[in-house]
Length: 502
Image (cartoon, rainbow, N blue to C red; front, top):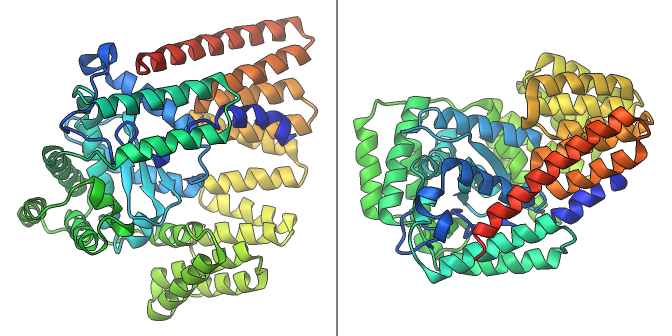
């Protein structure tokens, strides 16, 4: 079932392994904000790069990005980061587009802004943050680049390297729209853009402007503005020691200086003194990402050791979060008994946690106890209806229990509440429709998913399959309209990218 419904999209989205990990593409950390020389893109540059056009470029990149193996496809992480980003952006000087923040599985300390309000945060940045305000400080700085339109302003400069960068990116995205591109081609585009990234950097004026906008956002959103100064001061010190490696990655693309640090510190002293308590969510997400970024046994053992050390030396929510992280690692290792013990310890000092509830659901699933997983998911979602991951877990466990009609009804209700912000709902609805012997509906819902994430060729393919399966004239007519609309949108996307190719 899954292969039939999803295979077209995976082929389509394989190209251009992507800008999410290519800071050099379109204003990720390597793309200069006001540098000496970003490309003049002909008719697509300058005043023609409207906010709407910039957003469409970001959407095109994210089609590839969501398929990148380092993209953290975790609803809880995405919700936490995006809520923080939008809270900050609500106070952006001059306003900001709709902010979408996502995580990247990478222990390096880095973050980057892309066109249209998409911002990537490395897992290493979250893990290395000692306070929530430090994490918010880096995110606010990136939103400052977005709100001041540094990416669009950079496109008005002229530089041959930048022109090649844009042309390569556009070619990779066009190849993805054509479908049938293998992963190797994407990796080649990634390598080329990564090499270009080493030659580019934000200008001092742009960095200073983003600092000041970020400081204002932090203060008005209720975070401690000193968090930005502390984090950037630590990054500057680390970059001096590491010469751009590891924790110095952010400093290498966002040049830090004594002048910038002095300006930040002076501004902090002039602002009201804010001592903001870190949210519980921060500590739990931080622990989850510490485990998430451990890609092999050695790194996972190191993560568990660090979490155990924290559990022994800390108390309260931080101790509970550390033990929760240990439980996640043990689930990943298949040690369900150890995971259960760690979760029980986490609950001893901190009983009211949606994250611990989630881990208990996942533990029951890992143990093969679907009935218990469903019972726990039902109770957890009723307790924390704002946590979307718990809604997903409830629906998935309904499906695993064979209760597809209930799952579909629940998912349809969530779709009304969450809308296209959660396109994965369409995937789950399609799975239940297929299980209920509704192949036309299943493919139409998969098409809606692909439309929501911008994988237009896959959407067309699913609709054509639905058209061929259907024997109802009126249904066929409706699908014909949907196919025509999807093809029109695909043609517009190709036309857009062609403007940046030459």
